[in-house]
Structures are given as C-alpha cells and as structure tokens.
Length: 166
Image (cartoon, rainbow, N blue to C red):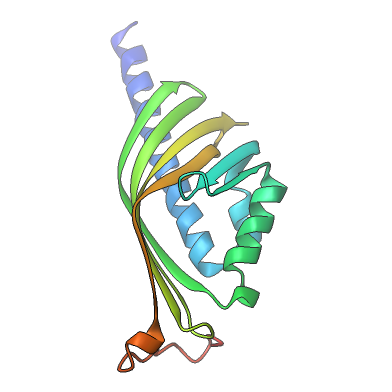
C-alpha cells in the first residue's frame, strides 16, 4: 500500500474509533435522559443485549427498547446516571469492531426509597451499517451490584431541579 493509502487507512481507523466512542456515549446519555427514540437509533436491527451477567437478555430493537422503557422509563420512577470510559476498541474490519468499557452506574427511585450502585465492564460488538456505526451487541458483567433503602439512611435528602418530577 502506498504512503497515501496507508495514511488514508489510518485516518479512517481513527474516524471509526471516534465514531464508536461517540455512539457509546450517546447510548448512555439517551438512557439517562430517557430519549427512547434516539436511543433506538444506536442499535443495529438485529442487536442483542445481555445486562447483569445474563439476567436480562433481549434480541431485536423493539424488545430491547420495551425492556429499557419499562425498567428505566418515567413511569418506573427511576433516575440514573451511567458513567462509562476506558474504551478498548478493536477494529476487526471496515464494518466490524468490538470494545470493552468500564461502567459506574448509580440509580435511584425516590418513590421506592431505593438506591442501586453498579460497577461493571461492558463487552460490545459494533457493525457499520450504511456508513454509520451501530451497536450489534452490548452487555455487562457486574463487578459489584449493591442496593439499599434510603429508609436506612434518614439524613439523606434528594434535591432535584424543578423540572424533574419526583
């Protein structure tokens, strides 16, 4: 391959890596902000998920979105923040990649007075579909998963912006 061809391939690889990083960050942002329609665009049509070391497995965008809307939607009363980073992404070819990400997730449900904290590692597979990277598979295995009742910590108060209904 010529120097120009090598340089073009290296630039394409960097662009692909950055696009995959942005995709994963959009996935977490949409989860936290409950932007279900935008979140659905992160997945390939044949996507699969495996959350909680196999506890929650789903195939296809409709099934995945139904689960996420039910478990994290506004009606559930659950709020969360997903912190992810330390990406290790391997390009397997021009339209396939896999990656590993660390996750720190905090969820709380004011109505249930319930908090959840999860530390995990995601294992992802990506596919480039019509020129755009999509999640083909995502899932995590927890390093720890802890839950507690805020009734056990009476000094804890929940302060939320006025636009958030609690």
